[in-house]
Length: 294
Image (cartoon, rainbow, N blue to C red; front, side, top):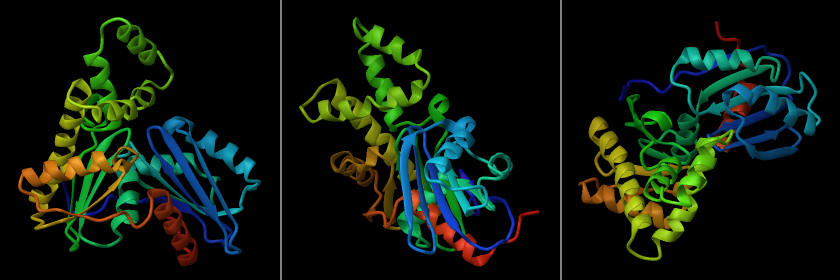
């Protein structure tokens, strides 16, 4: 998918004196938040993801736990999955009004790219509950691949691995387990949680689990190939984000699959996490005293 500029940021706010700066990474399974202030104080939290609809209530409770009063948060940056357009980001920023004096919403993959690669050209491969890739050529041109969500895509993601495992083991008692997960309040996260067990089984030797993992690695390698061809990146620097790619064996299999398809990639360990990038951006917003967006 072509994209000539990084996903636009949607912001609202005012320019009163700085206090706390907060970065939030809203994923499909977890929400991570980090708060810092100019005196060096720091809070952090990792909670089950409430989704977009439950985000405001979840952050309100978190502010209460951290004893942050209304007006204490100078700048809030939320990096969220499931947001495709500037209009969607603006809507979420408006829904979060009052949680910070200045609220900025960006896509989770943008925060992951900024954290992993900064301003460098390269490719960020994200594989957690969902999957996608974002690439930049360092001269203002961007491209993305995947990221269509569990209903239309996310091949190679933790959810995809869990779903393929359920499909392959639908006989009794697998059918009953699949029905329980589908009826859960958070079926996508519950199914994605199966991926770690499938990874473990795959290391034991040939079989269903290994075939699923191999197919998942091939799918993620395909995202790298698509981006590298779209942006004409020779020997691209490739970094990663997401719980699935934290597994070095799984990650190495993705790199091998991409190289078999002709991409001479150069893996680069992420410089910082997506939530760290979000809180850094929040700090910059506070120090630059950004005016409200029109």
